[in-house]
Amino acid sequence: MSFRNVLVILVLLSAAVWWLFHEDPEAEVRDAHQELARLLSKTEGEASSTMIFNARVLQSMFADTCEVTGDAEMFGGSYAPEEMVSTIIRVQGLFLSIDLTFHELVIEFPAADDAIVNFTAVLVGRSMMEGEEEAAETREVISRMRMVEGKWLFAEFRLRSPPRADAQIKTEYATIAEYM
Image 1 (cartoon, helix red, strand yellow):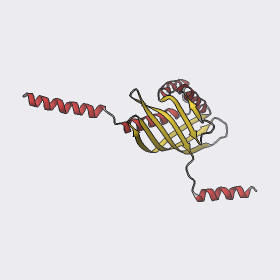
Image 2 (image 1 turned 180 degrees about the vertical axis):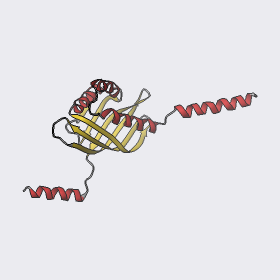
Image 3 (image 1 turned 45 degrees about the horizontal axis):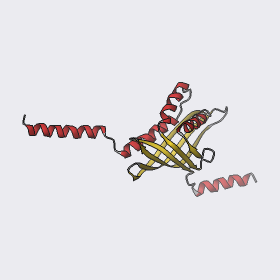
Image 4 (image 1 turned 90 degrees about the vertical axis):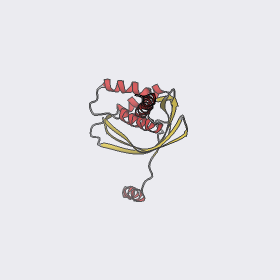
């Protein structure tokens, strides 16, 4: 085998290895969001050890300061990773089960180390309170991630209720009028 053939094989092999193991930033950000949704979800009867393990992983996903604003008045503020995880565990404790999914992710990169993601979050949960039915909430979310030491970390969440259809508003007003 000639030197030229060996060189061509090495170049092709190097390109294949790089292509297989190098994720593009958009895929990394998308994967981080899916992992966050998975870790925030909870199955009925989930063991405490699972929550503790998830807490350690969750803590590593947040920047030194993470801002929460918008329709999350109860949770609004600036959090350290430990505080964020503590709040998450308290909220999870109120539910028997939580199924959180993120949809329609639109990812933008205003800078190489900064990502802004617009998406719809859908939470379906069963409360610990007896007789409570399953509840579903939908929010439009804008998250900001920053690249810190080679890892994408969540730095901000802005939540807002999705716009309601006119028919839904009219139905709500009709229901309110019945009680007046």
